[in-house]
Image (tube, rainbow, N blue to C red):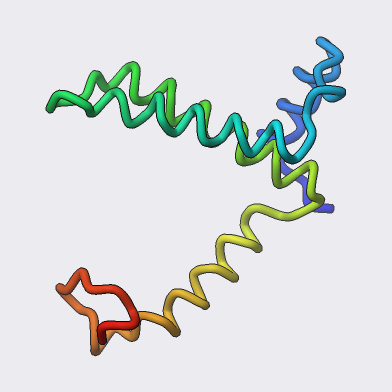
Length: 105
């Protein structure tokens, strides 16, 4: 298991409130989606309220870290693994400056 001060602070915060009992993978995944929708709402009508966007983004990241922790996954590792897969799907020489889906290259 990796060491991370953010994850450790979140674990402590949750333990102090006895909230781990509610943190099933399903509930955490739902919470990621809910927080992401709230983040999107910050941009709904044009210019974002950056203070609100910052708070909502923190909520998304918090639930992502909690979900990774629950699944015993290292966030840095899974992001880097996904980046490598995406590099293979979207070779730089074929997609530079383009926003097409990989199956349209």
